[in-house]
Image 1 (cartoon, rainbow, N blue to C red):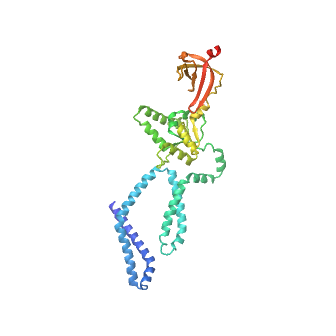
Image 2: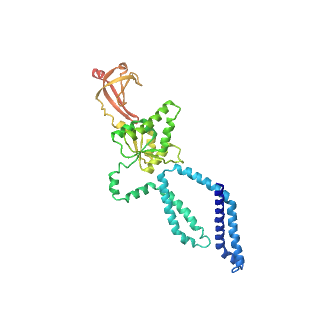
Image 3: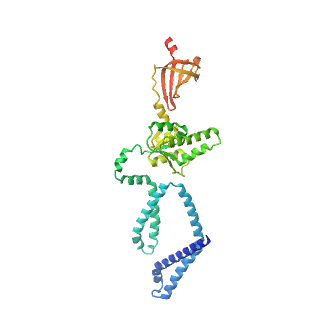
Length: 366
């Protein structure tokens, strides 16, 4: 390692000498205007030697600092690149190549600029290379779509799978809930299911919690994902994109859905509202569950089993198989029994459907 550092130090010193020589070449016309040195070979050669030795000496002295700083930058870059998805790395590399090609096409005319021409191509390479890389990563989805559209028959294929290609991004609550597996089995969900890396990490933290209930919920969520991927043979993709500038998982999900042009699958009421405010489509399985519940109209009869008291005096409460609450006026004395009731009204709320009824026997007596 020491030998390598010494060789690198010598190379940096040599590069410094080259820079010193370049400064001499571009600075000599200015020197000749100050003094009458033009044509004097001794002064010309001495000035050139001073430029080379000064550049090389300064670079040699600064080499340890340059080497240490470069190593720190390399280590930081490696750690940073490990967090970036391979797709982003490839896209960024392509953008960098395009930027460097443009910079080199501009290199010759820029090098003809008096005095500072030798450094302008370097600035152009750094600036345009970085700009190409950043733009490619930020526009990766559009680039991917553009490349895909150039393939033979791409337009017909895109039209036939337009709905299927729309990704569905799952949040933590809908994974833990478990009903998503049954919905996938039914065939009502099309397209890829996307699990964000930060959602998976949150699920792992819950599964490792010291609280028994949380731990069981987290493990249930991981089991559900395995079930969807293995038993149902559904396409589940892990997206490792993360946003260090955002702390909230819900906000990260909204950003990811915007970038992927996908829909969020959730049963979280607050996430639903936040996503809708930002124009992100949401599939709420609670709304789906409410939509497929049997329609009950006032005046219909049904058989219910009363299990507990209601909030108001004399009320009894029963539940349908789908969890719908039925409040029976005057049903308190029938608690623990199954009776026929007549529906009087139906109330639809954000939390679900609530049915109000009266015992059928009392209705007939009136």
